[in-house]
Length: 240
Ligand SMILES: NC(=O)c1ccc[n+]([C@@H]2O[C@H](COP(=O)([O-])OP(=O)(O)OC[C@H]3O[C@@H](n4cnc5c(N)ncnc54)[C@H](O)[C@@H]3O)[C@@H](O)[C@H]2O)c1
Image 1: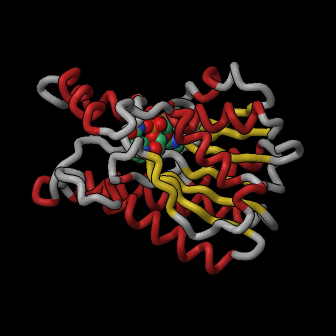
Image 2 (image 1 turned 135 degrees about the horizontal axis):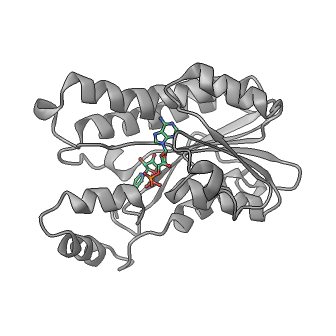
């Protein structure tokens, strides 16, 4: 990854942070975007990392952030930022909640990807979906909808932008991050739920952010040079 410039959205925490760290260790220049101002401090342990505070809901903020950094040639984009507040079935999902989730997970990805495509002649784009896009998750109507749409976007873009740009998708299972802890905290017995999920997995352990970062890294590497438009499930065997 020497001389490569890599953009990771949602890099302040969890999967995005682990991904930024892995690319930086491999010698890339890594730019992390996050709406949380902690992106500035959280990148201090990452060599060659620059953090940009910007909300993917705000196109002007995205343009300003990229402009300030003088970013003109991007090799890798990792669309990782996502939210899943107040998960619910469709009947219990207000229009405001629906719009908020679509605006971040789907339209936010559209916005940043369009900006980056103007700066990417050759490269790879990875979008983080979820196994909830594949398995018909309960009480996750809006979130699962966005994650399914991201898979469709991945396939459409692979056709539109090949051969110069490869576009792939990673679907994580249960990974221990803030988002997962928020899910557990909504359960009556969080630790019992954690253990229930862990024991049901063929691999008998929950995911670490690094498990997903490693898959993203592989898909961006030369070893994956004939892989595009694909969905790589990384879930400890949850969907097996
Ligand atoms: N943790 C899991 O179990 C799991 C499973 C499947 C998929 N995912 C997906 O992986 C991705 C990363 O999840 P995570 O678990 O690391 O979550 P996380 O909540 O720990 O981190 C998400 C990051 O995205 C940032 N973000 C959110 N909205 C943003 C916006 N509008 N603009 C800029 N930044 C924004 C947050 O500030 C945060 O730093 C998400 O897309 C999530 O849906 C996670």
